[in-house]
Image 1 (cartoon, rainbow, N blue to C red):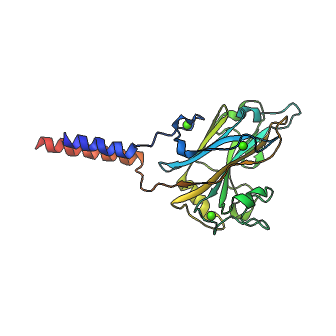
Image 2 (image 1 turned 180 degrees about the horizontal axis):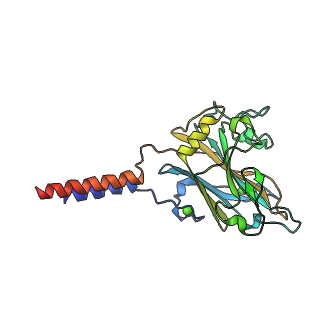
Image 3 (image 1 turned 90 degrees about the vertical axis):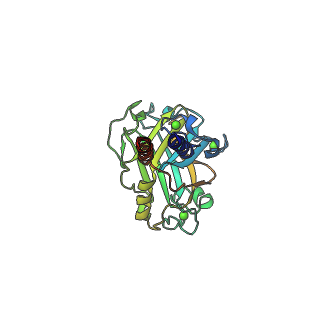
Length: 269
Ligand SMILES: [Ca+2]
Ligand SMILES: [Ca+2]
Ligand SMILES: [Ca+2]
């Protein structure tokens, strides 16, 4: 019985404060300290971000972007036949150091030379993980069919892109295979595995690795071809912890099995 009690305590300690995260566009699995407010009128005329979040849990980097209207307002085709589009991006200072950064031609320390604001308030950025939501968007080529509603399904005509690989800003890096995203109402929620992110970082020119902390910021741009025109809305960068030594779910199961086996064996004696 003692062993079962001990097992229970171990599992309680391992799971305390770590709600299961689900990429479903619902924020009820987020803790308050991982959610950051953004002013609701700091991008007049453009996409307006109201809250964003980022956290590391169970080997995954989760992030979300909340805007002041439904995401579906930016999907499909406008009446003039042009694609609506929206691009939420997670700007990543993977080692939380301004000594390392993504160089971009004449715009050192800026992941996107066209967007000067990043060079002034996001120093130290090593890569931008961007989710392109646009009709037919496939690894940099607009090759798929367009149509209202088609783009809302995760993985369908959408693409995660790491911008800035090899300093070649403007090109789109390799397709990411282990990402996931979901939109629901005003929220886009996404995740990327830390191991995949670290592998991408190793390919970058500054070659940094993920540190004990990262400094992150979410930004968003897009147009619905109507009253919302292009313009970045960016969050103030936040430092988040990268917990070490968190057992994978499979490891926890093994721990439970071995503890139960130990208890059974002792009772048999
Ligand atoms: Ca969720
Ligand atoms: Ca805002
Ligand atoms: Ca850095």
